[in-house]
Length: 219
Ligand code: 2AM
Image (tube, rainbow, N blue to C red; front, side):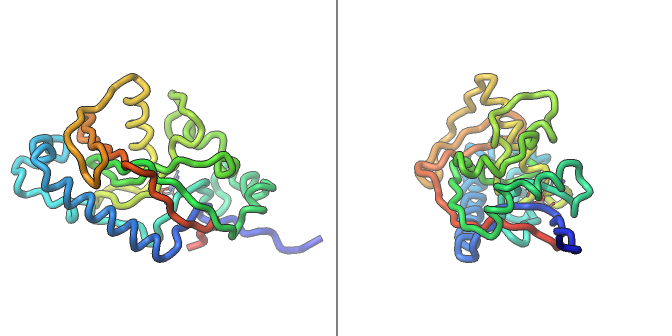
């Protein structure tokens, strides 16, 4: 028997390898630049709270970017959150710790609060996905497992990272109710759609693969 207890991290996540991270940051930058320049975007700025369409610089508006790009699987707050000890002890979590995984990004989205990449988890990756991840933030709704999976790319100055997954679920909820989104053009060869309330989604023409390592962040 060991005397030491495992230390539970702030959160568990798939962390992007360095060159993948640089690459995705550049994609996010280009996405915001191209979107900001689109006439269709300038016509639909109301939700961003700006009157003058020439005054909105998206790259400045989304002022905060995470230090390390990652897809959170479980936020634990060093064990303070319910279920975090159980999660850390799961056989699959232990076995996967420090292992490499390829994540698949299917779309990019932006709202007046956040910019994120939607991640489609594989069966194997869903093993590491907590059963209550979606309920945790949207208790009244039902989603397919893994719906909240995302990489936060940047947020507005007064917005917490956790908001990105909530915004993604809001978007999926709109799609579930049959809301199509208005097709307003193409970026990177992918279809750009506008939903209400300043919510935009770009479905990538091909899923973008990113190499990651599953691990914990101890901060
Ligand atoms: P994110 O996954 O959307 O980026 C540290 O705060 C990390 O844990 C962030 O990456 C954050 O958001 C994520 N996270 C997930 N759930 C959280 C929660 N309930 N509270 C705070 N952060 C959370």
